[in-house]
Structure formats: structure tokens, C-alpha cells
Length: 291
Ligand SMILES: C[S@@+](CC[C@H](N)C(=O)[O-])C[C@H]1O[C@@H](n2cnc3c(N)ncnc32)[C@H](O)[C@@H]1O
Image (cartoon, rainbow, N blue to C red):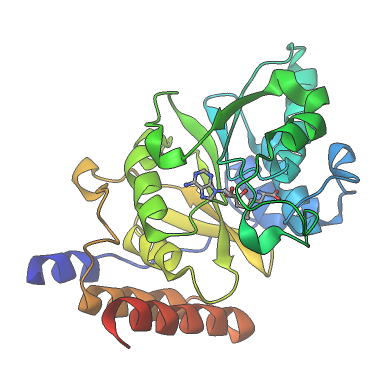
């Protein structure tokens, strides 16, 4: 697999954009004033796994960054927390343009209770696998006109919905899903415009495939901002050559390539954030290559 490693080594480090970007929307996103905004109205009281700053980020992305050139993907919506934050911003966008509600947010989820969430988000007595759809529908009833619900395994639903402007990824809990997203969603990102939010980038130590994927495409994405923990925001600055958008990127990545990419990804961060990436690298290498 030497050509594969050489291909990775030729990738340049992306530049971090700063608040002085010539693109005012990108500059505002990077400047981070959205952090001091109030909690999105529709998010108040909503059940979510997201941090408050992540809700504000999604609200800002849909309300101030979104231009209507593509759609918004809410991949992994659970009980509607991310959906409501995005919808709060989208309402602002539509109102500014005098437009009626339209289903610009595509919300994907299995809508099935995961075992670990029993006793936390659901009563302990509920069966793992029970449907969560009713609770999602209830939570999002006032914004039904803004969302298209795509229930079931996301990897069984090839994307045919056209350009994607905001891609919020909170579903890539396994590298096969991450690979599916690369092959199915990345091709319709809009160069120079689209934003990708990797929600698990700075969370725990078990999603190393996110670091590998974004580092593999480091030539194409700039890191814009983050929420300190959890979400990292990437701008799709430069188009990816189609042949690099493989659906087996992580599945068939060699250990040597992974080590190179992990080292490069961790070097972009400091302190606790770097420690998260290093621990994710160790976990991934142990799990897939025996340490
Ligand atoms: C961390 S939760 C999302 C949290 C949500 N964004 C919020 O605001 O609270 C991840 C979600 O991904 C969903 N999920 C995991 N694997 C999936 C798959 N293959 N297809 C569709 N949804 C999936 C789970 O059902 C779960 O609700």
C-alpha cells in the first residue's frame, strides 16, 4: 500500500481561518459571537445530548451562515435536539427572505432506544430497540414543515437530495458509517461554501476514524472553530478529487497511514484537546491493529 501512504504524505496542512476572513459569513462563524447569543428559543426545554454551545452553533449556522444554495443534513437527530436548534436558525433565515416553511433540514435517525440510554434519556423499564419516533415527532411538531425525516439506517439511504450546505454529523459512531458519509454526502458538498460539523471530534477516545477522515482530506477542509468539547467545524474550502471519495477509506486504511494521519491531526491541537486526539488514536490502533 505504498502509493496510499505517499498520497497521504503529499497532503498539506490546512490553514486555520481566522476572524479576518474575506468571507463575512465565515468570519462571523470564526469570530464566535454566536457563543454569547441566548439559547435558541426552540431549544429551551428540549431533550438533547448536545452542549449549549453546540445548540447555539447549529442555530447560527442555519440562521446566519446558510444561504439556501443547498440543504441542511441533521445526521443523528435522536429526540430532536439538533433538529430544533437548526430549525430555530432556519426560521430566521426564511423570515428574512419572506419565505414560507419548507423542509430544508433532512433529519436522519434509527429512532430506536439504545441500551446505554435507558435510565438516562428514557425510563429504565423501556426495552432497548423500542421506537423513539413518537417522542421525536412530538418534540418537533411545531417545525414539521421545516424537516424531512429520514428514518432507518442512514447507510441504507443513498443521498439523492442535491447539494448540501450544512452537514451536521452526529451519527458516525462506527467507521463504516463514517465511510458511508464520505462516499455519499461529501460528493455533494459545495466547494468554497459548505460547512461540516463533526460532533464527536473532541469527545472521548473512541471515534478516531473522524480524525483519520478529516485529516485525510486536510487539503480540502479548513478548521474554522470548535465548541471546546465535542464539535469541530470544518469549511469545505477546496474541491476533493472524485477518486479520493472512497467508501472504504477507513475500512482499508493501513496502520502506517493511520499513524501518519493521527500524528498530523493531533499536532493541530493543544492541551486537553490534543490529549483527546492522542487517546482516540491509541484506542483505534489497539482496536484495529493490536496497539
Ligand atoms: C448522539 S445521538 C444524536 C444526538 C442528537 N443530535 C441530539 O441533539 O441530541 C446519535 C444518534 O445517531 C443515531 N444512529 C446511530 N447509528 C445510526 C445509523 N446507522 N443510522 C441512523 N441513525 C443512527 C442513534 O439512533 C442516535 O439517536
